[in-house]
Length: 144
Image (cartoon, rainbow, N blue to C red; front, side, top):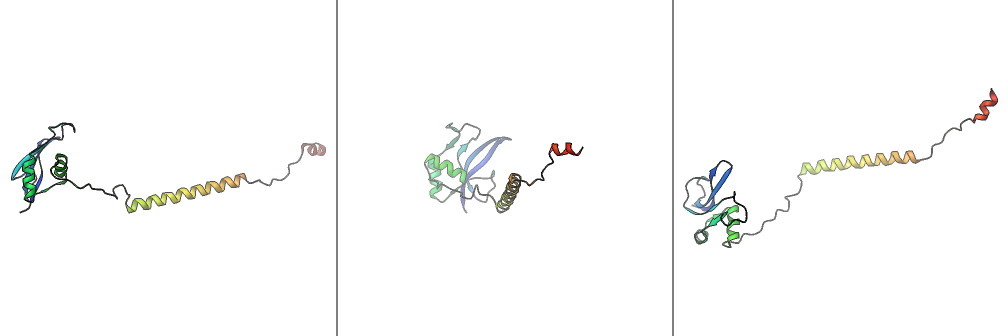
């Protein structure tokens, strides 16, 4: 039987309140648990000392017998100085997916094509045009 230290939700709708419990890993989230070792109230401000209340001695005991904390509970234990949590870094978090990269390449190709066309048009407009010489008004008066 594997044991986990996790959160069990309570409270009303849109007003969450959690108990930090030690439970069998196959038990439902809000179901039976072995022991309640603390509480977590996310509605309180982050600096409030009542936001996370944890019995450190019991947490150490359950960790020593092999209980595995969930990620959120591991953060609480790390903040309390009970169990150090390794920092995680997701280097691909901000990276775009394959299809998004393809769309970006297509957009870049369209932009460069449009810029090249605009440059070609500007060069054509700047080139001197050969025009036929216009008749002077003096020649017109002579004919009449």
